[in-house]
Image (cartoon, rainbow, N blue to C red; front, side, top):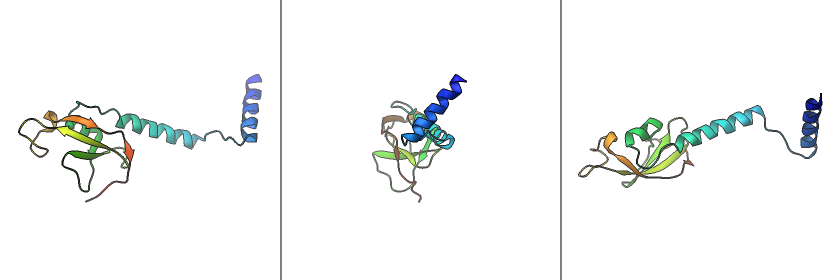
Length: 116
């Protein structure tokens, strides 16, 4: 009885003050976004390109020679810019993914996917 009275009071105060409690849809959306952010930030400097490609795929469009743009597989709008370190004498075309390491990675950002 007391718990339901307290809950009713909180709802009435929130409604009277113009605050709204988050809806189930809002909470689900925030949870989904938090999970995508954690997924995107799980990739760290020193990991291999093979590990990167488990979570991200290369974005379309023109790419720089020194930095590459990758898009999160589970969300086509979350991207990171990655600088790769290739084995000596190899480049982005010849170096195996397992021997290519992440030299730097940007914070995740939002941008529509490019398509070729």
